[in-house]
Length: 170
Image (cartoon, rainbow, N blue to C red; front, side):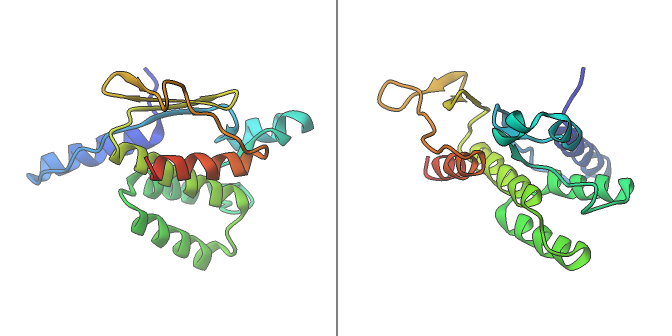
């Protein structure tokens, strides 16, 4: 069974806290699948120009954090972030250590912020397919006006911002 790296880190943190005798607060994990976001740099770079134009890159580029172990640690810290202040601290730390934050990293931070906001609102699944937003809470789809909401923005990065705003205002 494959689990996401952020979920793995969360489970590891909870297990360590339990062994130490302290109680880690379990975090609701929001499963996400956004057909317009590329979270894997290799797949993004291998995509054709037309496909890449329809994707918002959201990852830590190899040319930004070159050392694999350092990049893994950065992803681990991102996965452990539990609120906006921690994301802001990560952004600042990365900027200080690695230089100006590229668009793919800004998108990754926004993607993570959106997942945290969704989890806070008890949304367990967030999926976007062909601009249709499907949110699941309590095992049921969340409809607005009896319909699935839709993204109106054309550009993938704008779609990510629009979706994040919708979740924050939910």
